[in-house]
Length: 388
Image 1 (cartoon, rainbow, N blue to C red):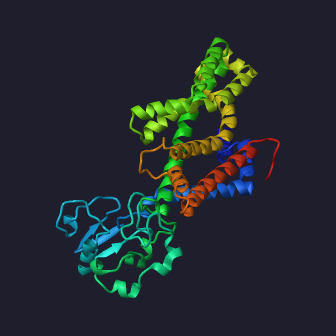
Image 2 (image 1 turned 180 degrees about the horizontal axis):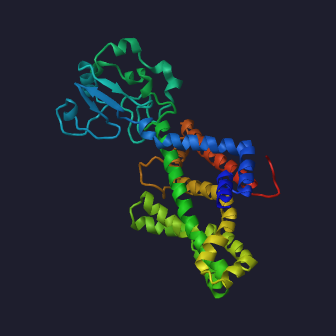
Image 3 (image 1 turned 30 degrees about the vertical axis):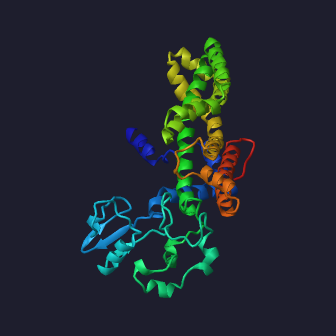
């Protein structure tokens, strides 16, 4: 009999990783082509920006010089280490250093864009902010004659004879490459939004769970506290704290966390209030199961359904908050790659429309993708809608 049971258990199909309900939700999301492709495009763009140092950088990726290998993109070298005379950090756009590489027959591999978010163009064709290089090719010098001369004797603007030095989206009013700043700014905006969304969601879910499960005075006191807390003008508080503390990524994140955690409290609270008197919850209490276990294992999974549908919209709101604060000048430190700062430069330099257009298009595409994903997730969890 035991052998029969053993063979039966061995022949049993493996248990699916997802329940039938979650399989239906996943199928509904995949059937929503707009949401699926929006997620793919957003993840592709975000993954691309994670390797920004290898795409847009004013330092080479790899140098092979006199039998030695150097990796300037990930490690700082002094000029003396590369054959120069000084112990200062190497400037890889210095004509002397570039001529030295050429004389020694060095192999130099550059990223696609030879500009970082903070580097400035040294020989612009026009005053800053300068238009995209492709729109002013007639202003460039004769590249055939320019490249035949030593770098120190080349005419002004000859660096654009190499397409890696082009400013494909122009420069800002400080001579920094706009495309490089967009790549780095996209990354920092998404990372900031993800951090703010995840941390605030954890706090909000915990607060809403405690309110909804225990109810009574606990719920009443929490609700009154939230009403008072949300009445505090967050912008004024941000101004006060910014005047005391030096602006930074984590300071700004901490300030916004003080108010953003209340976003999901009402949603989770309502789910726990609805489910706390269900029969299976009362049965668990009768069996002596602790309140923490009931909340974590029996009530939280149901509450997470509503929470997950809100997540993409919370993320888009977090990104928009950072962009707005940077636009007003209360966001990230000066010089940080920021989409809001790019929009502010566009407002201040109306004669350079590429600044405002680039910032607007980047923010619009990012938020549109997140909203499309959020709508697809919401519809996938809606039992009244079926796409598969």
